[in-house]
Image (cartoon, rainbow, N blue to C red):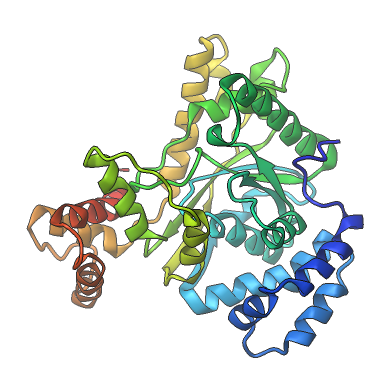
Length: 368
């Protein structure tokens, strides 16, 4: 069932581990994540894995903490006490980094004594056997994007299929699911839930649309990075679009964004687990039109994600630079110097307009 999109079953894990260890890029992965360990020892650990859970605990958990140590100034979380052991949830998260938003959640779930979740992964990113094996062994499942299907009708059918898989995973498999609140990452610093995703959630739930959403146990998640992942890459895309130029992804651009997000310094990172959406939350919208219902549910998720978003000093600095006034509110002189030095280095080869776009990415969350 759902064989074309699901993660690997435990019976498929040993063969995947063998392919990963034999891949030409495996030594590079080892050198970056675990430079202090011998490649043979890492290979032995992987080859001992007989389930997705073993792969996550033996390899992914220490690998993600290696990234936390290398690229952040600390990962914090609040609200894990809102989650019950043995209960499955649909985590709906703002989306700032292709891989790490969901990856950080997984290690925090493990640390809280909870099961990891399955993770949506765009079909456009499932390229190359190594990526596929790492992803599907890590409980990732394939999600079609509008640009990976042949027609609007095909996308509708795939959305119905995805909805059925998510409901099946939560209500029958007993697994939680992580999904982004929108198609693709937030580029401008303003997180917003796509109403279409609410429509998709309900497609498989029958006529009682309040119950259809309530039984998914939707949990808004808010992740905040002190240094926006891929900030200059996002600014370049936004600048091109704002300049009226068509933006066409270059070959390998998605992979470059994945690697940049992983390796780039992120400063402090915080995750806020927001209140679960209940039937009582959704019931006031029961008699609205379909569009109104989806819009109001999305608005609740937005409100909780934005309330949980942690504003870092860089946002205040960016706002002051844009306004031309150095107020000193929300940051120290040392933080101002660090931000402005990085800004100068990143934008020195680009037009002045790009600098403003980059500053807006950091300043926009203050409008929450």
